[in-house]
Image 1 (cartoon, helix red, strand yellow):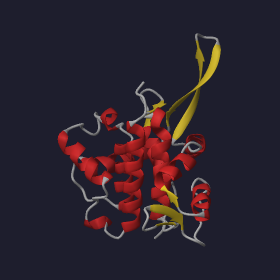
Image 2 (tube, rainbow, N blue to C red; image 1 turned 90 degrees about the vertical axis):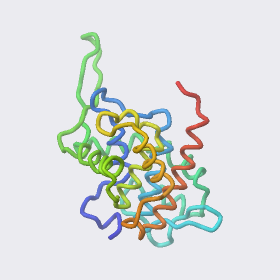
Image 3 (cartoon, rainbow, N blue to C red; image 1 turned 45 degrees about the vertical axis):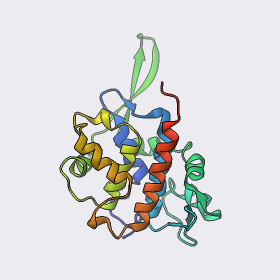
Length: 226
């Protein structure tokens, strides 16, 4: 079953942004490095749906004749189908434009809701709050099972947990996912593509996710901290 054929048609990049959304504050964790991990999620989803391939030179390219149906994924496939690119180049090209359309899609699905508010009783603004679909809680439970309970992950959940780890925001989930040495060790294993036997068939997805995660971590590590 490909990513486009599965009953759950949300993309990995939507799931990642929904997880990064913090209901208590109405903000998105890791905003200053967001485009790297969102771009990585798009690459992982393309690989998961057999839309992406890798070359011996460590580049990624779109599989000819296999464009994804999802509009969030199609621009990245078009870019990579033109010619294989280095992962760092791909992240820089496809990542910056993702936040707004992905957030709009989450709002359209009811996963995140917009709430009108007034500042100082005068100025109208819009705040974000968690929707009532329960999807964020289910995603967080899936990631917790892998990182905390030691469950063998499906490829999709493994990629989601690896990208969440790469974002550097896991400490902010300490209430649901304890920030301890065991979790850190498992998260680093997932970043490297050590997903276990159940995900063995997803070799390209594992490779692409590990490449994207490594590139994101390198890029994030050299950014100034606010």
